[in-house]
Length: 192
Image 1 (tube, helix red, strand yellow):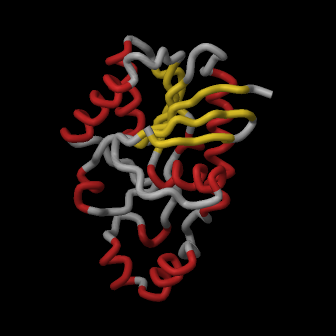
Image 2 (cartoon, rainbow, N blue to C red):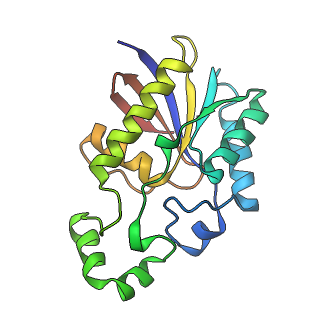
Image 3 (cartoon, rainbow, N blue to C red):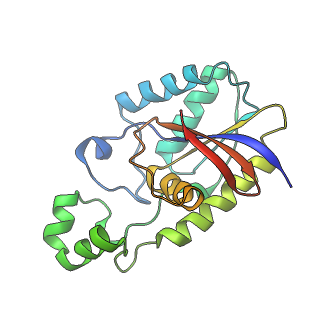
């Protein structure tokens, strides 16, 4: 069994994040604040001794990963589409208020029961997908003596952390990061 340390981080801010819009698979680039958050993330990891960086293929995560890698003198090892944010069906591109107005029944089911609307990915399926991607990063990039950084998305990271912790963690801010111990699954996780 592979035992590795991983840092998992949410991408920097986009204009849609700033406006409170749900992005899902919609490919929105970083804004200026997001670029600054990515540089700050790189600086925060300067002494971590990373073996490499892995990223979602969506531009906001991939841009964040490239900026961090540049700060640290590394390259992005590869991108993994399984690190993408969940697809949000009819909620994608909308604010929470717009979701509640346009899809009141579906929004109530999501808010009260975490039941996704038709066309959206179920949190359990999302967790399985992201867990597989973290396992590949642990095996392919991290080493016993050097962790890897995985740059993904807030909902994707929260789903896999909830599976490991048994409780849904709070919102992960743009540029936010967790340190996780990987042993075929997440066995320990802490916000950093």
